[in-house]
Length: 167
Image 1 (cartoon, rainbow, N blue to C red):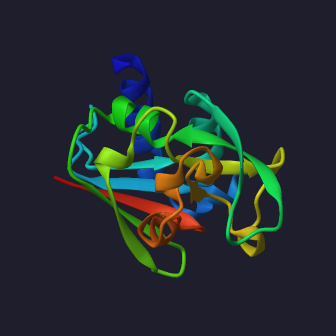
Image 2: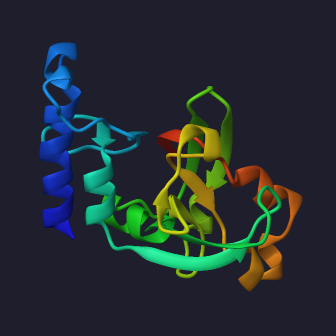
């Protein structure tokens, strides 16, 4: 686990320092910025994860229906539990923000085995911004009645691009 954090910290430090010209040189585009109550090995307090970095984390897949889509879909991504474990976060709140600056609070206590994921695939395909992507917090709504509530639905933020960890 520590090696993964060190790897993320090293890559994140590089990503943070990229200029616009470096991005034009086909560098991976950061999809998810994680900030707040974290510190990387390079001393930075922000991680910038691209798709490759997200996909390097343990993958979780489940099928569920949603109130925003028709039928049952297969979602694949990194579980919040795995992400929080990688970051060493055990409590607090995640302030999840979308590309349009819409923000919701997700308690770290939601990050449990069999719980929500940050989905990057729906039905095996990357999601576009038009289709609620590229990242969408999805709970396995069909597997647990507790996940079918207005509170949980409000935490299911799509077009996610930032997480701030607040202790």
